[in-house]
Each structure stands twice: as C-alpha cells, then as structure tokens.
Image (tube, rainbow, N blue to C red; front, side, top):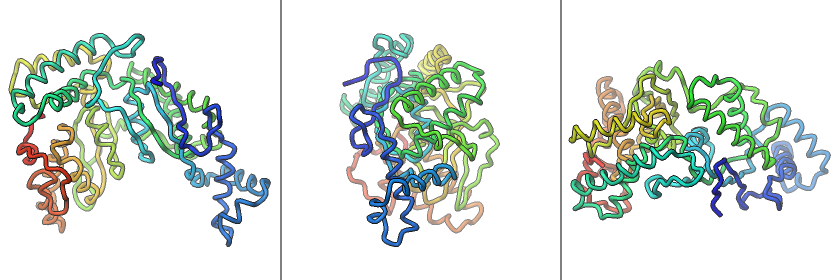
Length: 403
C-alpha cells in the first residue's frame, strides 16, 4: 500500500531477521546475536560454541562492547527500511554515508504529479509540465531518428524535473546495518542541535531529520549507547570549506566543479569516491544542452528557475568536491561515459578525465600512457570493457550528445 500521508513514514521490510510481529525492530535479540559474534575472536571453537553459552555471559560481552566503543559487531545485523515521503535531499544525505544499498524511485521513469496535501507547489508542477512539452519537441527535432516516443518522454522527464524542489518526497528501500543507522541518527541529531537555522533550506532540512529520527525511535531501532558519537563525527554531505580544496591529479586525485543537486545524487553512488558539496552564495542553474542553441529558450529557462529559487530546485548548482584514487576514477568512467548515463554527469566525468590526462602528461606521470586508453570516446571504446548492449548511437559513443 502506498503511503498517501504528507509526513515521512518508515517501515521495516520482512527480510530483516530481527523483526517483531508489530513491525518494530527486535533490538534485544539483535544485540544478543552481536554479543555472541563478539566472542568469536576469543573462542577456539568459534560461533557454534558461543551461541549456546549462558545469557549472562553474552550480556557481559554486550555491555563491554557497547560501552567501550567496539561497535563493529553491530554491523552484522542489517535492516531493510521502506522509506516513504522522504525528501530527496535527505535521501542524498544518507546515501552519502556509503555503507548502504538503496533502490530509489527514478525521476526519469516517473512523472511529477502534485496531489492533495503534497509538499510540491503548483508552480513546480506547472513549470515541470511546461518544460516537459518543450523538451519533448526539442529532443524529437534533434534525435527523433534515434529515439522512440517512449524514450523521448523519459529524457524529457529527466530534464523537466530540474524545476522540482530538492525536498521533493521520494520513495526508496534502504538497507544498512544496525550500527550504521544509529550512527546516522546521531549525526542528524548533531546537525539539528548545532546547525543554525539561517535559511529556509536548513530549517526544512532539520525538520525532515527530526521526523526521520522520530520514525527510527518508533520502530525501536535507536540504541542509546550507539548514539554517543564519541568521535564527534558529522554528516559528510556538507562542507562549507570545500572551496579551499586543492586540485591534484596523480595516483590519487582531488578536483572541484559545479554541478546540480541532481548530478550530485548521481555521482555519490560511486561509494569508493568521496563527495562533498558547498552551497553557492550566488545561485546558478544547470541548463540542458538540448536548448543551448536557442537564446530565447535559455533566457526563459533561467527566468523560470529564478522564479522557484526559494524552494531549491534540483537544477540549482552547488560546488562539488570529488576525491579518490586513479583506479576508482577509471571505474567511474566505465559507468558514466555511456549514452545511457545522465548527460550532466557524463559530461563532467569526460571533462575531469581530460583534465586528469593533461595533468599526468604535464608531470610525465607513469600513468599518462594508461589514461590515454580511456580518452577515445564512450566506455564501449575502452580496451578493458565489454558493452552488453550496443546503443548504435554515434553521438553517444563520441560523447557529443546533447540529451
């Protein structure tokens, strides 16, 4: 059943082992299991022996591990959460913490519809529908010989959603460990307590976090000893000093660029790479390349974006800090340099690749010959990648497409 209420709603899915009949988390049994696992490194006979030990012995080990910060054993218990009406930006926040698996409703495949009591405004719906029709025409004019009407509609939806707020409610299944979800809750609590409500964006985000933590508490997921946050860690998404990062390309790399909220949500899925964002003081917006050759349409797009700037549309640009190692960046190229990838992240990955190549050549770095293998076009041109389905799309393969 689809949750029609306006507030965040979370349900635990039945594949979670420690689940009560009322849908709440059986925290006691979960903790006892982890307490047994904690004894494996001390017991010569292993887990099969420990699971039959006395409850008192296990509980002593539980208290020891929970109180001294040895929490890794509580990662053995995964929880699958059905997150409903979660703001997109909140989904981005939890996805940025890397230890997860997620399946989220796609803005490419689902239209935006404002229903009763929706958090979306009528202005967003009107702009979405307006540009959906404009983009369908533009895409068909340029690529009607390549894409059918269904594909054109999907691409138009993907670009029209740039007008929809980053607080748009989304639905997703999110799986992480018992420890990690408690850690995330503690970081949210830290953000709520320490971050000034200096603008509407922060105020709405803090309210969403309060709802999220409240739902976890309702489900009996929160454990006080896992919420202590002794290391004073915080959420990794935001960094007000990202602009101070130095650009570097070698065995490891660090780069800065501007991209939309929508692009960031795509990029952060590469969990071996570190991403942070910093909000821009002077707002900028992504403009789809498919309309760039029409000055009138570009002006109209930007004017419409500015009309909804107070709700932080997904087309709003942020400063993105990206850091990782060479091998993981090449893996990113094998994912994003493809005609099926979102255009914005495809272009940025291509630009970063060329910047990486030039930097390695300038330094006569030992990787300069290796990186050349990946600069001839889309991933189907890579010597170490096998494409499972040829797109037969020339501009897609040459990375020159505009949609």
